[in-house]
Structures are given as C-alpha cells and as structure tokens.
Amino acid sequence: LGMLYPPTAPGSEASAGDAGETLADGLDRAVAAVLERRLKAGRRAEATLTEREEALLRSIRGRFFGYVAPCRQMPARGIAAGMQDDSYRDIFEDVDWPHSDGNMVPLTLRMIS
Image 1 (cartoon, helix red, strand yellow):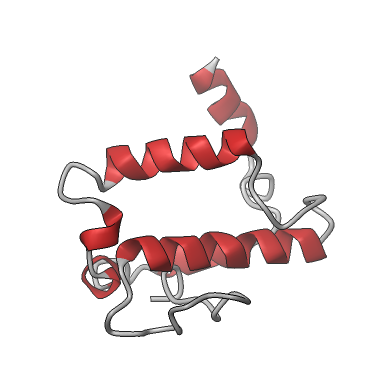
Image 2: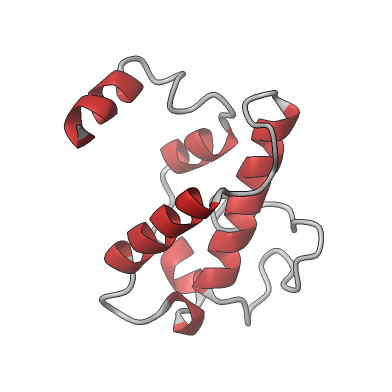
C-alpha cells in the first residue's frame, strides 16, 4: 500500500488511506511525494512536473488504467490491494531510481529511441 498511500502531500484534500480516495487522488499524492523527495535529494530543481512530464504521466495512466474506468472513478484501495510486492515500495522510496537500477536508464533510452 505504500505506493498509493504515502504521507499526505501538503495541500492534499484526501488523507492517507481515506476510504473515499480515488485512484487519481492516490496517484497524485504518490507523484507529489516522489517529487518532494527527489527535490530534497537534489535530483530535481522543483517539486512539480513540467508540462511535458504531466502530459506523459496522463498518457501512461490512461493506457494503464483508463481501459477500465477513469482514475477519478476507481477506488484506490482496489488497485493497492494487488500491489503487495516490496519492489514497488523500494522503487517509490528510492530517490535515485532508475539510475540506481543498473542498466535501467540506458536500456530504457535504447528502447524508446
């Protein structure tokens, strides 16, 4: 549950683990928490997404979850229940990921070029 239920980001309307929280709320809070940690670690200049990053994230969310229902209509607990593997939490908490994961960056760049 750590991936979808990180500590509540400043200004977030939903609290961590709120039963009424949607998947969109949980994903937005998770992204905010990751950006904040990466800023504090010196990996980002700002704790906000660029327009391009935001558009890419919306596209990925739409392709991954959108075929079922919009994220605003999906309960976060339903998705979080299927994510029990610690590797999700490890990636979420690693401010250097994907750089800390061996050849992940060069392999990903090769795949998308």
